[in-house]
Structures are given as C-alpha cells and as structure tokens.
Image (cartoon, rainbow, N blue to C red; front, side, top):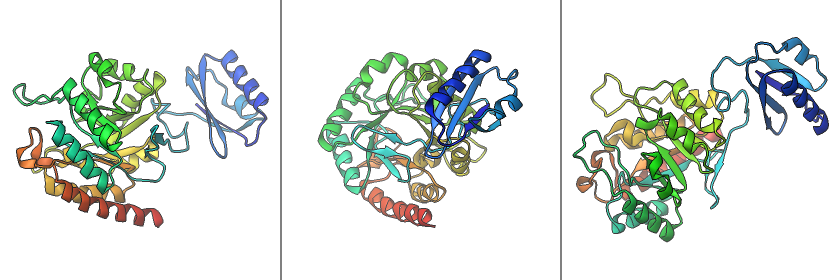
Length: 337
C-alpha cells in the first residue's frame, strides 16, 4: 500500500502518523521524501488496513494499493529516479549516459591498462573487465581470478576509472574490496543467497537480466538485494535467449522504457552480450541511447581476434571512440526534445 502525504506537513505530525500505522497494523513503513511530496510504503499484511480511515487523516493526500510483489524497486513507492553516485563523482542515472567499457576478461597488465587508458580518452567513466569468468564449457578460459582483480586495481590506479567486475561466489567477496561496482551476471540473477549477501554491502550492484527471465523476475531479484538494505542497484538488459539463431541473444530494447516506468532504478544496456557480433554493437548502442538507457556496458579489446574470451563481440578502442560520439549525439538529441 502507498500513502502519499500532503506537502509541507510538520515532521512531528508525520512521525506521529507513522507510529500510529505501525502500532495499529502488522506492517513496516518505508519513507521516501521527494522534492514535492513524501511517500509512505506499507510492507506486510495490509489486508486489515482501512483505506477510508487512512484517507481521512489530515496528513494524507491519497492512498492506493499496490499489486506488484516488488516494493522497494517500485516507482510507485519511490517516484523520483535513483542516481548511483560513486565517491569519485561518477554517476549512473540522473540524466547522463554512463559509459562502462573494457575487455571481456583481463589477460595481462599491459592489456588491461592500455585498454583502460584508451576508453577513458574516449569518454568512458567506468572500466569493466572479467577476473572470474562463467563459461559454458569447463575447458574454456575461466579468467585470471584473484590476479585479474589485482591487475584491474593497477589499471584503476593509473586511470582513476572505477572498476566494474563480476562476482561468481559469496566466497570471493573478500577479494572484492577494491571493486567499485559488483556485477551479478545473467546466470546468477536468481542466486538468491548471493543476492542477499550483496544486499548487506554498501557498494553499487549491477544486476544483469537472466537468459530467460521476465522483467518482473529481474525486479524481484533487485528486491532481494534492496530488502537487505542495499538500495544501490543498477538494472542491466543484456539480451534474452529466443528462437533466433542469427545473434547470440535477442536484445529486448522495449525492456528499457518498461523498466524505467515500473522502477526508479537506473537501467543500462549491454549490446555486446545481446548480439555477440561486433558490428551490431554500434546500432544497438544507438538504439539504447534513443529509448532512454542510463548507460551502456561495452566490451572493448585491443586485439579482438586474439582475445581469450568473446573476441567476436568485442570492438577495438578506435571503434569505441567512434561509437561514443554517435551515442552521445543521439542521447543529447533525444533528451532535448
């Protein structure tokens, strides 16, 4: 249930009303204070709550029930967009296009540092790179693991770019102290024990949509993280598995405006995993910027043909530089309309 309070109510009056709600009903009350109104979200068994009685209170503007099972990720409870801000000032959400770029996997210090410097010059605000790699085949390159994280830290020290990298197991958490944004991959979107543990952190979590997951399932996974106290969640559309075989996955471009309508959380797009084809990354990135994505996460490699992982879906630093100019033009044009 959502209760919207009247503007400019004395805090003492609001506190008294909340105390009355928690004392009278078996509910928890979450409070969101916006620029123009305060919204109370009632979580728990609201069947006994008398809407007419609530609506009659002096402090209440209106009351409505919420049918969706996700509450903390729901825009109805939190009308204003969430903006993720890192200590260095980098933002995801809030009207800008965050660019996250780097190789699928870390291969050497020279490789990751060189790519980091290149993508930063082109406008990337975050460095992505895989240290732990989930692979379909047990014989494929699994990443450099702890050594890969150390090399990412070296690239961060040289460029100042915050690190975005994927976690595979709760057991690896002690290694992620220097990681700025922890990524949960598509295969782990419903690893609920991992999500609950990440919910106890104070770091942003980039949550990728599962291979065959619905939008509601993605939001419920975000709810697992947020329910534990960590509300710094970034949603990522990365393509779905469909009957189509021409591409690695099928990018659900409609998921971006749908998610932004249903949720206040920032939404980014991964055109690299969505397509699996390097020449498709640019048009999909442009389309993502056009429909209102808050950011892009793109695989960039200095030598894709010799990449140890996903070279076919990686673009070169020069191609990334060209892509950035185009997506920024589209993003700025759409936002000026």
